Length: 410
Image (cartoon, rainbow, N blue to C red; front, side):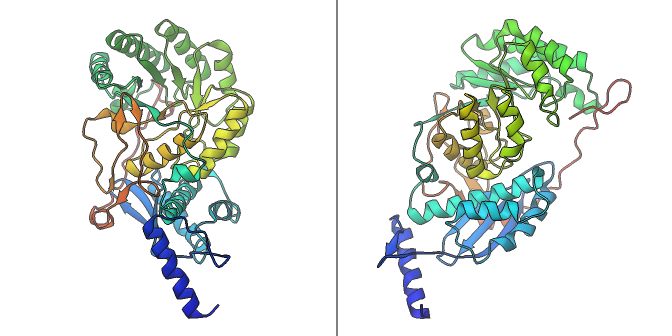
Protein backbone atom coordinates (compact mmCIF):
# COMPACT_ATOMS: atom_id res chain seq x y z
CA UNK A 1 0.00 0.00 0.00
CA UNK A 2 1.45 3.42 -1.00
CA UNK A 3 1.73 6.37 1.37
CA UNK A 4 -1.14 8.29 -0.33
CA UNK A 5 -3.53 5.36 0.13
CA UNK A 6 -2.51 5.03 3.78
CA UNK A 7 -3.10 8.75 4.35
CA UNK A 8 -6.52 8.63 2.66
CA UNK A 9 -7.59 5.62 4.74
CA UNK A 10 -6.51 7.26 7.99
CA UNK A 11 -8.34 10.46 7.05
CA UNK A 12 -11.45 8.46 6.34
CA UNK A 13 -11.12 6.64 9.66
CA UNK A 14 -10.86 9.93 11.53
CA UNK A 15 -13.99 11.12 9.78
CA UNK A 16 -15.87 7.95 10.63
CA UNK A 17 -14.78 8.14 14.27
CA UNK A 18 -15.69 11.80 14.52
CA UNK A 19 -19.13 11.13 13.05
CA UNK A 20 -19.73 8.39 15.58
CA UNK A 21 -20.17 5.71 12.89
CA UNK A 22 -18.93 2.15 13.00
CA UNK A 23 -15.48 1.89 11.43
CA UNK A 24 -15.68 -1.41 9.61
CA UNK A 25 -14.18 -1.76 6.14
CA UNK A 26 -13.53 0.07 2.92
CA UNK A 27 -13.57 -1.90 -0.35
CA UNK A 28 -13.48 -5.08 1.73
CA UNK A 29 -10.33 -4.04 3.58
CA UNK A 30 -10.22 -3.73 7.36
CA UNK A 31 -9.37 -0.31 8.76
CA UNK A 32 -6.56 -0.27 11.30
CA UNK A 33 -5.14 2.23 13.77
CA UNK A 34 -1.68 2.07 15.29
CA UNK A 35 -0.56 3.07 18.76
CA UNK A 36 2.03 5.80 18.41
CA UNK A 37 2.69 6.83 22.00
CA UNK A 38 1.80 5.95 25.57
CA UNK A 39 2.81 7.63 28.81
CA UNK A 40 1.89 7.60 32.50
CA UNK A 41 0.55 10.82 34.02
CA UNK A 42 0.93 11.22 37.79
CA UNK A 43 -1.27 13.92 39.26
CA UNK A 44 -2.53 14.50 42.79
CA UNK A 45 -2.77 10.98 44.20
CA UNK A 46 -3.63 9.34 40.88
CA UNK A 47 -1.72 7.39 38.23
CA UNK A 48 -3.24 7.65 34.75
CA UNK A 49 -2.19 6.31 31.36
CA UNK A 50 -2.56 8.14 28.06
CA UNK A 51 -2.46 6.13 24.80
CA UNK A 52 -2.31 7.97 21.46
CA UNK A 53 -3.02 6.60 17.99
CA UNK A 54 -2.25 7.62 14.43
CA UNK A 55 -6.00 8.13 13.89
CA UNK A 56 -6.00 11.06 16.30
CA UNK A 57 -7.97 9.13 18.92
CA UNK A 58 -6.63 9.17 22.47
CA UNK A 59 -7.64 6.84 25.29
CA UNK A 60 -7.12 7.13 29.04
CA UNK A 61 -6.84 4.47 31.72
CA UNK A 62 -6.17 4.44 35.44
CA UNK A 63 -3.49 2.55 37.39
CA UNK A 64 -4.07 4.31 40.72
CA UNK A 65 -2.96 2.30 43.72
CA UNK A 66 -2.53 4.68 46.63
CA UNK A 67 -0.20 2.30 48.42
CA UNK A 68 2.30 1.65 45.59
CA UNK A 69 1.99 4.45 42.99
CA UNK A 70 5.63 4.40 41.91
CA UNK A 71 5.49 0.64 41.38
CA UNK A 72 2.43 1.09 39.16
CA UNK A 73 4.17 3.84 37.19
CA UNK A 74 7.31 1.73 36.81
CA UNK A 75 5.37 -1.29 35.53
CA UNK A 76 3.56 0.91 33.02
CA UNK A 77 6.92 2.09 31.70
CA UNK A 78 8.03 -1.54 31.42
CA UNK A 79 4.90 -2.53 29.48
CA UNK A 80 4.52 0.46 27.14
CA UNK A 81 7.11 -0.87 24.62
CA UNK A 82 4.80 -3.85 24.01
CA UNK A 83 2.09 -1.44 22.83
CA UNK A 84 3.88 0.85 20.37
CA UNK A 85 3.02 0.13 16.75
CA UNK A 86 0.21 -2.26 17.67
CA UNK A 87 -3.46 -2.08 16.69
CA UNK A 88 -5.39 -0.72 19.72
CA UNK A 89 -8.52 -2.60 18.66
CA UNK A 90 -6.80 -5.90 19.51
CA UNK A 91 -7.60 -5.51 23.18
CA UNK A 92 -7.44 -9.19 24.13
CA UNK A 93 -4.18 -9.69 22.24
CA UNK A 94 -2.57 -6.70 23.93
CA UNK A 95 -3.84 -7.81 27.36
CA UNK A 96 -2.21 -11.20 26.83
CA UNK A 97 0.95 -9.55 25.49
CA UNK A 98 1.28 -7.22 28.48
CA UNK A 99 0.68 -10.03 30.95
CA UNK A 100 2.33 -13.10 29.41
CA UNK A 101 5.38 -11.68 27.65
CA UNK A 102 6.80 -10.82 31.07
CA UNK A 103 8.64 -13.65 32.84
CA UNK A 104 7.53 -12.34 36.26
CA UNK A 105 3.83 -11.62 36.35
CA UNK A 106 0.96 -11.04 38.74
CA UNK A 107 0.82 -8.90 41.85
CA UNK A 108 -0.48 -5.39 42.46
CA UNK A 109 1.91 -3.48 40.18
CA UNK A 110 1.24 -5.69 37.17
CA UNK A 111 -2.48 -5.71 37.94
CA UNK A 112 -2.65 -1.92 38.07
CA UNK A 113 -0.60 -1.41 34.90
CA UNK A 114 -2.51 -3.97 32.82
CA UNK A 115 -5.75 -2.46 34.13
CA UNK A 116 -4.80 1.01 32.88
CA UNK A 117 -3.78 -0.34 29.48
CA UNK A 118 -7.01 -2.29 29.13
CA UNK A 119 -9.17 0.69 30.13
CA UNK A 120 -7.42 3.03 27.71
CA UNK A 121 -7.84 0.56 24.84
CA UNK A 122 -11.56 0.20 25.51
CA UNK A 123 -11.80 4.00 25.68
CA UNK A 124 -10.15 4.26 22.25
CA UNK A 125 -12.36 1.60 20.72
CA UNK A 126 -15.55 3.16 22.06
CA UNK A 127 -14.51 6.56 20.74
CA UNK A 128 -13.62 5.06 17.34
CA UNK A 129 -17.05 3.50 16.98
CA UNK A 130 -18.88 6.37 18.64
CA UNK A 131 -20.50 4.24 21.36
CA UNK A 132 -20.21 3.74 25.12
CA UNK A 133 -17.90 0.90 26.14
CA UNK A 134 -20.77 -1.13 27.60
CA UNK A 135 -22.21 -1.47 24.09
CA UNK A 136 -19.00 -3.16 22.95
CA UNK A 137 -19.17 -5.56 25.91
CA UNK A 138 -22.52 -7.00 24.81
CA UNK A 139 -24.84 -4.15 25.69
CA UNK A 140 -26.84 -3.43 28.81
CA UNK A 141 -27.36 -6.44 31.05
CA UNK A 142 -29.16 -3.95 33.31
CA UNK A 143 -30.27 -0.36 32.81
CA UNK A 144 -28.78 0.96 36.06
CA UNK A 145 -26.48 -0.27 38.84
CA UNK A 146 -27.17 -0.19 42.55
CA UNK A 147 -24.44 1.57 44.56
CA UNK A 148 -23.22 1.59 48.12
CA UNK A 149 -21.70 4.51 49.97
CA UNK A 150 -19.50 4.78 53.05
CA UNK A 151 -19.40 6.29 56.49
CA UNK A 152 -16.04 7.33 57.94
CA UNK A 153 -16.29 8.23 61.58
CA UNK A 154 -14.35 8.00 64.82
CA UNK A 155 -17.41 7.41 67.02
CA UNK A 156 -20.55 5.29 66.74
CA UNK A 157 -22.75 8.38 67.07
CA UNK A 158 -21.02 10.13 64.17
CA UNK A 159 -21.20 6.98 62.05
CA UNK A 160 -24.93 6.78 62.69
CA UNK A 161 -25.39 10.44 61.76
CA UNK A 162 -23.52 10.02 58.49
CA UNK A 163 -25.49 6.88 57.67
CA UNK A 164 -28.76 8.73 58.19
CA UNK A 165 -27.58 11.46 55.81
CA UNK A 166 -26.68 8.92 53.11
CA UNK A 167 -29.97 7.11 53.50
CA UNK A 168 -31.91 10.37 53.31
CA UNK A 169 -30.38 10.94 49.87
CA UNK A 170 -31.59 7.56 48.66
CA UNK A 171 -28.50 5.43 49.22
CA UNK A 172 -29.77 1.95 50.08
CA UNK A 173 -26.50 0.24 51.06
CA UNK A 174 -23.77 1.59 53.35
CA UNK A 175 -20.35 0.25 54.25
CA UNK A 176 -18.51 1.03 57.48
CA UNK A 177 -15.56 -0.07 59.56
CA UNK A 178 -15.10 0.89 63.17
CA UNK A 179 -11.51 0.47 64.25
CA UNK A 180 -9.76 3.43 62.63
CA UNK A 181 -10.01 5.53 65.75
CA UNK A 182 -7.06 3.47 67.01
CA UNK A 183 -4.94 3.85 63.86
CA UNK A 184 -3.64 7.16 65.15
CA UNK A 185 -1.96 5.34 68.03
CA UNK A 186 -0.84 2.39 65.83
CA UNK A 187 -2.97 -0.08 67.78
CA UNK A 188 -5.00 -3.07 66.65
CA UNK A 189 -6.41 -5.36 69.31
CA UNK A 190 -8.79 -8.05 67.99
CA UNK A 191 -11.08 -8.08 71.02
CA UNK A 192 -11.32 -4.30 71.16
CA UNK A 193 -11.91 -4.05 67.41
CA UNK A 194 -14.72 -6.64 67.46
CA UNK A 195 -16.42 -4.82 70.33
CA UNK A 196 -16.18 -1.52 68.47
CA UNK A 197 -17.47 -3.00 65.20
CA UNK A 198 -20.59 -4.24 66.98
CA UNK A 199 -21.07 -0.89 68.73
CA UNK A 200 -21.04 0.91 65.38
CA UNK A 201 -23.22 -1.71 63.70
CA UNK A 202 -25.90 -1.43 66.40
CA UNK A 203 -25.90 2.39 66.25
CA UNK A 204 -26.11 2.51 62.46
CA UNK A 205 -28.86 -0.10 62.28
CA UNK A 206 -30.92 1.84 64.82
CA UNK A 207 -30.39 5.07 62.85
CA UNK A 208 -31.32 3.80 59.37
CA UNK A 209 -33.79 1.01 60.14
CA UNK A 210 -34.03 -2.39 58.51
CA UNK A 211 -34.42 -1.32 54.88
CA UNK A 212 -30.83 -0.13 54.39
CA UNK A 213 -28.25 -2.85 53.76
CA UNK A 214 -25.13 -2.59 55.94
CA UNK A 215 -21.72 -3.85 54.85
CA UNK A 216 -19.39 -4.74 57.69
CA UNK A 217 -15.84 -4.02 56.47
CA UNK A 218 -12.98 -5.84 58.22
CA UNK A 219 -10.07 -4.86 55.94
CA UNK A 220 -8.51 -8.30 56.41
CA UNK A 221 -7.50 -7.48 59.97
CA UNK A 222 -8.90 -10.42 61.89
CA UNK A 223 -7.56 -13.89 62.53
CA UNK A 224 -10.24 -16.52 61.70
CA UNK A 225 -11.40 -17.09 65.28
CA UNK A 226 -12.00 -13.37 65.76
CA UNK A 227 -13.81 -13.04 62.44
CA UNK A 228 -16.08 -15.87 63.60
CA UNK A 229 -16.72 -14.08 66.89
CA UNK A 230 -17.53 -10.87 65.02
CA UNK A 231 -20.01 -12.72 62.79
CA UNK A 232 -21.69 -14.35 65.82
CA UNK A 233 -22.22 -11.01 67.53
CA UNK A 234 -23.31 -9.29 64.29
CA UNK A 235 -26.07 -11.74 63.34
CA UNK A 236 -28.88 -10.02 65.32
CA UNK A 237 -28.30 -6.85 63.29
CA UNK A 238 -28.60 -8.63 59.92
CA UNK A 239 -25.65 -7.16 57.99
CA UNK A 240 -25.81 -7.57 54.23
CA UNK A 241 -22.32 -9.05 54.22
CA UNK A 242 -18.95 -9.14 55.95
CA UNK A 243 -16.15 -7.90 53.71
CA UNK A 244 -12.57 -9.24 53.93
CA UNK A 245 -13.01 -10.94 57.31
CA UNK A 246 -9.49 -12.44 57.22
CA UNK A 247 -6.18 -11.82 55.45
CA UNK A 248 -6.03 -12.61 51.74
CA UNK A 249 -2.81 -14.63 51.42
CA UNK A 250 -4.44 -17.96 52.34
CA UNK A 251 -7.97 -18.14 50.89
CA UNK A 252 -8.60 -21.47 52.60
CA UNK A 253 -8.81 -19.65 55.94
CA UNK A 254 -12.11 -18.24 54.69
CA UNK A 255 -13.55 -21.77 54.89
CA UNK A 256 -13.45 -21.59 58.69
CA UNK A 257 -15.52 -18.40 58.71
CA UNK A 258 -17.84 -19.67 55.96
CA UNK A 259 -18.69 -22.77 58.02
CA UNK A 260 -19.42 -20.76 61.17
CA UNK A 261 -21.89 -18.10 59.98
CA UNK A 262 -24.96 -17.58 57.83
CA UNK A 263 -23.92 -13.99 57.05
CA UNK A 264 -22.74 -13.66 53.42
CA UNK A 265 -19.01 -13.06 52.94
CA UNK A 266 -17.09 -11.09 50.32
CA UNK A 267 -13.45 -10.73 49.30
CA UNK A 268 -11.24 -9.93 46.31
CA UNK A 269 -10.04 -6.33 46.32
CA UNK A 270 -6.47 -7.58 46.81
CA UNK A 271 -6.67 -10.19 44.04
CA UNK A 272 -5.04 -9.05 40.80
CA UNK A 273 -6.25 -11.42 38.07
CA UNK A 274 -8.63 -14.34 37.48
CA UNK A 275 -6.07 -16.85 38.74
CA UNK A 276 -5.97 -15.10 42.13
CA UNK A 277 -9.75 -15.59 42.34
CA UNK A 278 -9.76 -19.25 41.28
CA UNK A 279 -9.39 -20.96 44.68
CA UNK A 280 -11.92 -18.70 46.37
CA UNK A 281 -14.46 -19.15 43.58
CA UNK A 282 -14.28 -22.91 42.99
CA UNK A 283 -14.46 -23.64 46.73
CA UNK A 284 -17.36 -21.23 47.28
CA UNK A 285 -15.59 -19.57 50.18
CA UNK A 286 -17.57 -16.37 49.71
CA UNK A 287 -20.89 -15.21 48.29
CA UNK A 288 -19.60 -12.06 46.62
CA UNK A 289 -16.43 -11.34 44.61
CA UNK A 290 -14.77 -7.93 44.85
CA UNK A 291 -12.47 -7.27 41.87
CA UNK A 292 -11.25 -3.69 41.39
CA UNK A 293 -11.11 -2.53 37.77
CA UNK A 294 -7.94 -0.52 38.53
CA UNK A 295 -6.18 -3.51 40.12
CA UNK A 296 -7.53 -6.77 38.66
CA UNK A 297 -6.52 -6.37 35.01
CA UNK A 298 -9.17 -3.94 33.82
CA UNK A 299 -12.57 -4.27 32.20
CA UNK A 300 -11.61 -7.36 30.18
CA UNK A 301 -10.44 -9.29 33.22
CA UNK A 302 -13.37 -8.21 35.38
CA UNK A 303 -15.71 -9.64 32.75
CA UNK A 304 -13.87 -12.98 32.93
CA UNK A 305 -13.91 -12.99 36.73
CA UNK A 306 -17.64 -12.35 36.53
CA UNK A 307 -18.08 -15.31 34.18
CA UNK A 308 -16.10 -17.56 36.53
CA UNK A 309 -18.26 -16.49 39.46
CA UNK A 310 -21.45 -16.95 37.43
CA UNK A 311 -20.68 -20.67 37.06
CA UNK A 312 -20.69 -20.99 40.87
CA UNK A 313 -23.68 -18.67 41.42
CA UNK A 314 -21.53 -15.95 42.95
CA UNK A 315 -22.18 -12.28 42.25
CA UNK A 316 -19.78 -9.37 41.88
CA UNK A 317 -19.65 -6.28 44.06
CA UNK A 318 -16.73 -4.45 42.42
CA UNK A 319 -14.37 -2.64 44.76
CA UNK A 320 -13.80 0.96 43.70
CA UNK A 321 -11.88 3.60 45.60
CA UNK A 322 -10.89 5.47 42.43
CA UNK A 323 -12.00 8.79 41.04
CA UNK A 324 -14.26 9.40 38.04
CA UNK A 325 -12.15 7.48 35.50
CA UNK A 326 -11.96 4.25 37.51
CA UNK A 327 -15.59 4.73 38.48
CA UNK A 328 -16.56 5.07 34.81
CA UNK A 329 -14.74 1.85 33.91
CA UNK A 330 -16.38 0.08 36.87
CA UNK A 331 -19.81 1.24 35.77
CA UNK A 332 -19.39 0.16 32.14
CA UNK A 333 -18.30 -3.31 33.25
CA UNK A 334 -21.11 -3.56 35.81
CA UNK A 335 -23.73 -2.59 33.24
CA UNK A 336 -22.64 -5.44 30.94
CA UNK A 337 -21.82 -8.25 33.42
CA UNK A 338 -24.97 -10.18 34.34
CA UNK A 339 -24.06 -11.20 37.89
CA UNK A 340 -23.27 -7.81 39.43
CA UNK A 341 -25.15 -7.05 42.65
CA UNK A 342 -23.96 -3.49 43.31
CA UNK A 343 -20.83 -1.35 43.05
CA UNK A 344 -18.82 0.71 45.49
CA UNK A 345 -19.40 4.43 44.97
CA UNK A 346 -17.29 6.82 47.09
CA UNK A 347 -18.79 9.71 45.14
CA UNK A 348 -22.15 8.87 46.73
CA UNK A 349 -20.82 10.11 50.07
CA UNK A 350 -21.12 13.76 49.01
CA UNK A 351 -23.76 15.87 47.34
CA UNK A 352 -21.01 17.55 45.28
CA UNK A 353 -18.09 15.13 44.76
CA UNK A 354 -14.87 16.61 43.42
CA UNK A 355 -14.04 15.61 39.85
CA UNK A 356 -10.78 17.53 39.31
CA UNK A 357 -9.05 16.28 36.13
CA UNK A 358 -11.70 13.73 35.08
CA UNK A 359 -15.41 14.35 34.83
CA UNK A 360 -18.24 13.59 35.27
CA UNK A 361 -19.24 11.08 37.89
CA UNK A 362 -22.31 9.01 37.00
CA UNK A 363 -25.67 10.46 37.96
CA UNK A 364 -27.39 8.83 40.92
CA UNK A 365 -31.11 8.16 41.05
CA UNK A 366 -32.72 6.52 44.11
CA UNK A 367 -29.52 4.69 45.00
CA UNK A 368 -28.65 3.60 41.46
CA UNK A 369 -25.96 4.84 39.08
CA UNK A 370 -27.20 5.61 35.57
CA UNK A 371 -25.16 4.80 32.44
CA UNK A 372 -22.60 7.24 31.10
CA UNK A 373 -23.76 7.80 27.53
CA UNK A 374 -20.73 9.40 25.89
CA UNK A 375 -18.42 7.45 23.56
CA UNK A 376 -15.69 5.34 25.11
CA UNK A 377 -15.65 5.57 28.89
CA UNK A 378 -17.92 8.62 28.68
CA UNK A 379 -15.67 10.94 30.68
CA UNK A 380 -13.46 13.88 29.75
CA UNK A 381 -9.80 14.07 30.79
CA UNK A 382 -8.36 17.54 31.37
CA UNK A 383 -4.73 16.84 30.55
CA UNK A 384 -3.56 20.41 31.01
CA UNK A 385 -4.98 20.52 34.52
CA UNK A 386 -3.60 17.07 35.31
CA UNK A 387 -0.08 18.11 34.39
CA UNK A 388 -0.37 21.26 36.48
CA UNK A 389 -1.18 19.40 39.73
CA UNK A 390 1.92 18.06 41.52
CA UNK A 391 1.89 14.42 42.50
CA UNK A 392 1.63 13.96 46.26
CA UNK A 393 3.98 11.35 47.63
CA UNK A 394 1.94 8.87 49.70
CA UNK A 395 2.50 8.78 53.42
CA UNK A 396 3.23 5.72 55.51
CA UNK A 397 0.35 3.49 56.53
CA UNK A 398 -0.24 3.06 60.26
CA UNK A 399 2.35 0.80 61.85
CA UNK A 400 -0.24 -1.26 63.67
CA UNK A 401 0.80 -3.34 66.65
CA UNK A 402 -0.88 -5.71 69.06
CA UNK A 403 -0.82 -4.61 72.72
CA UNK A 404 2.18 -6.93 73.13
CA UNK A 405 4.07 -5.10 70.36
CA UNK A 406 3.64 -7.71 67.60
CA UNK A 407 2.89 -6.54 64.05
CA UNK A 408 -0.78 -6.40 63.03
CA UNK A 409 -2.34 -5.94 59.61
CA UNK A 410 -3.49 -2.64 58.19
